[in-house]
Length: 384
Image (cartoon, rainbow, N blue to C red; front, side):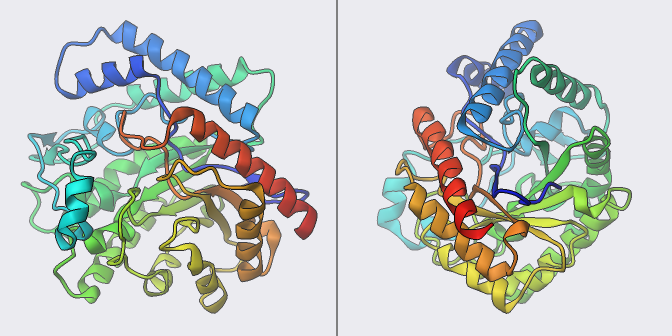
């Protein structure tokens, strides 16, 4: 992975706004409606080129396709793997249960989506076809080749086995551990191909934090941490042929505006996360509940050489961060790690993790990314 040698590099966490025409096609497809594949492919290509161009215009150094071809950051696997069908019933986040008046505000905006009612495991999970993955990667490369300017480096997202096992509920395997390991074995195909194509692999693992106040909300902390250990172990096995310095792990407490008082502290998680066979962490450091946790990186430092992609832009609010605020957050992360070269400036999470569910206006998203670049330039002058 590229480090911030001469300047603080900028990146983001994966999903970016999709055009309304593409959103409609993806939602229809997710409902099982008939969608013309050529029409969908054309929309995806246009959206991908647009997303790349906007990122470059905003000054993003390490970019991707904005996840334009995917209906969400994890449910897309049902088109590539066997064993999924029906519908899951995700438990509510603990905030919604504990704060009824918040639930009244939250629920009208949290319409039934692919993230709240994904498919479930009804048979053996295995990777059935690489056709969609290859098409996705080929289209991205063609779109990138058409740009007059390039990213310094490209990254590509793929889900943690744990988020699939938690969200896409299990009717087939004898235990959660068995299910997690089966999904990890299937995901190995994506993990290895992404890196073979020369990209940085980003593992999206909201399960490694968010499930503490969702699936494990009524269980002891130790049970949740045991689940984290099972997932990290399965992930490491799936990554055994992938160089760790080509992988970054995204940990998330839930990309929604809410109280978040039940979030598991990073201090409890860090020793377990540091067992992952990766070369860096993508962490939330901009939202009001986790902005202080840069201090944890001083008390419980990441493994030697790991990068920290510090979330310095909040993806749940339409406030545009001032570049001075962005620079301050980058500087705090650099002081905590002790080396500004190991810091990249990023976003707390994605802006459209499930198609059409983004809460930040599209024009504001690009303004936030421009503020990210401006703040990184200020931090560069102060740190390097």
